[in-house]
View 1 (cartoon, rainbow, N blue to C red):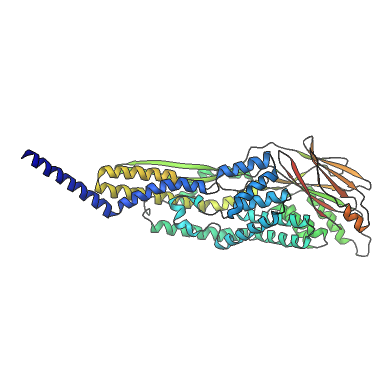
View 2 (cartoon, one colour; view 1 turned 60 degrees about the vertical axis):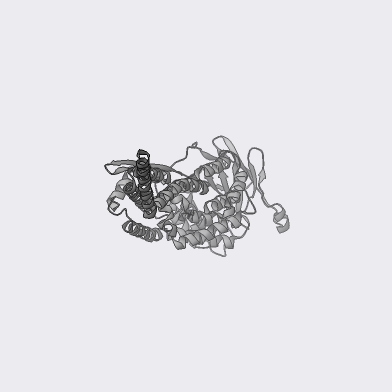
Length: 519
């Protein structure tokens, strides 16, 4: 009899457990728990699929410490999936290493940039779901306007080096147009992005849990971005190196528009060399067409050095212990950080009249200008995503707790782990751009001269400025070419012809390219 009662009691307990399990399954909470556990796994998977910091740093180590051509080949492999970030890295490094694939890569970069700009750099359809439930790393890299400007800039340099000034002028016009409309573009984009995030928040279960108004966002920005002032951000998004190159090319071809670009570059950089250029070209313009051509000739040197800023992560992790459960609220934000690098001094080692380099463009400041404009949208999106993840945790915990208190605790733990694992800032940023761009000018003497370009006391390039044979066929045979010496480059220039020289200096070596020589 006792045995029969025991069996009946056991059967009753099993029935109750089954009923609770059935209720749990039918409630949909079980599916929610499975989804959360899957999201924890996916958070790690997506972090590995996206262009991550480890890949970027590996590329950067090769680019700056070893060989630009090697870095270019690595970037090409990563760019096979048409990842915009790697297309830009491969295109720029390809130009610097004189790769035949450079133009195609830069063209593909621009195609993607144009498409993303049209759709909205700060706005994405996936932002409604993917970025909320995991993080922004699951989205395509959509680039920045300053990167688009640089893509056009390097395409112009490439066309110039190939002797195609017509296409170079087209690219320079595109670059200038891009940076001129940047301010209005971001004003509209930020307004749309903020409205999108607010709508997403109001429709979610997080509405009312966390305050996401502008005051809260401003508080976060003030707390975590006070260092932006150190980057001396440029006003109006204008990159003076683009304005200067445009002005120089146009002025050398007798186009009066060149003077306007030179004035713009001078207004930003206040460079004495640009002031001298303005004076020189204004005098050239004043000379009568009947007068003999000026015998003055110059070589302008555009030198890129250092590595642009990188991004690091600032996290806010708040474990919330309440009477109802243990939850996690977190946000992760990208920050700009200067890369450690030596302070180099560049000079011209000769009897040339212009013997020093001047700062033309501070690229970190240009990047900081655009980054600062994006911050409110980035911080708002992070705050909204963190709030929605908190709401998911609470709903999961409370739903499971109605079935079984033990399951409620398990749900709270799973939700907590999911929130922490999926909270990550998007740290993707190009690393191939310089920290700053410098400028120098050499006036050609009446006789043959040799000029060394020095980094400290080390020669990175030697220029031989010498008479060129007037016969066109012989002149073509004597056209200046770069000869890669073991220690540095040697470039031959024509004494009576204006020239523009491009140099990308890295700690490993300098890469020199003649990009323009007047006929």
